[in-house]
Image (cartoon, one colour):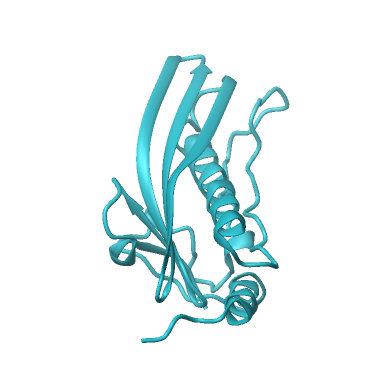
Length: 167
């Protein structure tokens, strides 16, 4: 199979944001794409107990890059992971009030493949809440191409990961 052109990558990545997306993923809790066919940038989870003193707010997902290259795809994936984990933290800590939270994402490897890009990221999450202090570190591999954004927790083959957006 021949490599896809950068122009086609841009066009289809824009479709990830502007076109209606299909739900996907292994489980409903793993996927940010809802069954009502909203796209990635619309996927901000609901939290029933947000207070005025809440430190973190839900983060909208980023627009895909207009120019597709190793740097722009890496930055896009880092922003997606930051929003994904930050939003997930808010959902998981719904019953407690956060007094501080930090989500730091570092790209450890970006590889251009025939069908798209594979981006390995390492995510550090730390927070302080009324229930105590927490910290986690995770590794995730993303696969980005013209039609799909996949997220594979624990690294590995991103093509086997959970579909976050598919248009």
